[in-house]
View 1 (cartoon, rainbow, N blue to C red):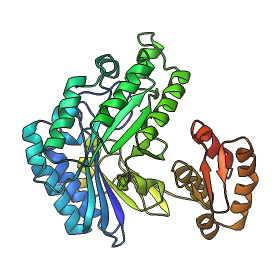
View 2: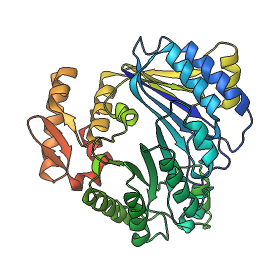
View 3: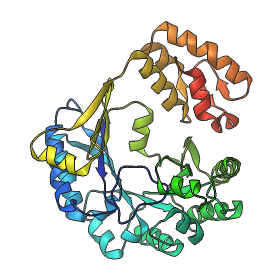
Length: 375
């Protein structure tokens, strides 16, 4: 089984913190569905006959597509690859797009999971982030989605926002818990080079992000959600039992996935490739029957490092048996040599079968992974 990612690069306005490829313009919107459908045909052999167990519409703002465009893309994916029974089909959505009329139309499509970009229910936070909705609209969108039968919901939150105190952060989480949202993704606000947020902070217009504040709120996040019955199954993801994101989990367990659309990434187990990050170039290339992408064949060292990085982020950790079956003995010796000091520092929990981040280690996940990399 494999996954399919569809990148929709349109936004009505850009959030200050976002560095994903998207345009604050709907130019070429009428052409994107046609291009995506054609690319699916052009990539028909990429998954080597494996059926799709997940489809994920990301962006950008996929909820700017209408139901007929969404259905056409899914239908083409089924024709070319086949979609397995019970497949998870997710659409990312902005709260202000989720009107009753839109949800009624969406319910007619095969989409069975929504990922709603809430980020915060506090209006000051939302202004800082340059989100299109306010806190009340976010609540209404969730309630409407539940009312229309979209019970398999995921909601995104951002912590570490300057001037957002710990109580506001707890109230954001409490709102989702009260609504019994089955899946919550929570990310620390990061300042990516070249974003509007980066520019505003360097110009003194915005306060800089406080790393200590983010650490405190990450700790509150773990305590609060675990106390309310959520599994912390990946560094940034929490779910009620049985509500893991199957699509995102495929990224962390090394399954194949195909990315369609401008800037979309793909992985076939041996190499990675990424489409051109230009909507105009993408559409022109596809219209001529050409694929415009770059490709990197992974070395054994890169495969090992990716295995460490992705496995370590999850509650299942690094599987020692899988590592021994997949990689040469030198990598296993390297791992044990470097893992023991990290366990002694309290960052790793080691057993004969697993290596899992401790609670303390979760604060330093990237650093711990880098200590285990083959350099």
